[in-house]
Image (cartoon, rainbow, N blue to C red; front, side, top):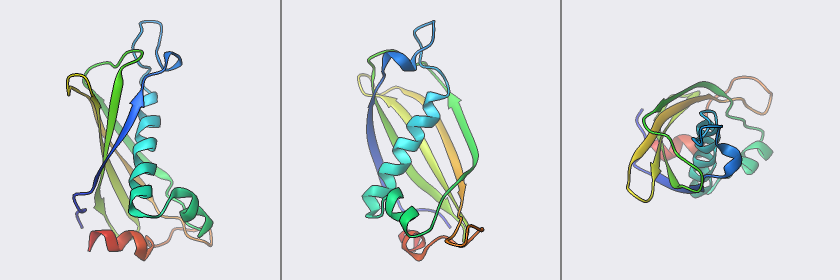
Length: 135
C-alpha cells in the first residue's frame, strides 16, 4: 500500500562536531537526521515515538540506504523532508531528502524500512493508528 502525501520538513543546522577533517558532514550523520525526520513525521500524525513505545510498540530499522549527492558543511541550514512511502501489515518505509535551504540543492536521499514489534516484544502488525493513515 502506498502512503498519503504527508511530508514533514525538519530543520537541521550542521554543527561543527558533525563534520570530518575535510569540513564535510560525516556520512553517518545523515542517518541521524533521517531519525529526526521520522520522529517529526510521527509527531505530526499525533502519535509521538514516546507515546508509541508507551503503548508497547517499537519500529526497529531493518534496512537503511542513503545516496550522497553533495556534501553539507558546517553551519549549513538544512531541511530533512520525510514521507512515509509504503506500508505493509508489518512494515513501513520512510523516504528522505536532505536539502540545503540556501539553494534548494538535494544533498542526500534515502530510505529506511522498519518492522513492527508489539507489546509482547515479538513481530506484530502495525497499529491501526498508523495503518489508518494509509487508508
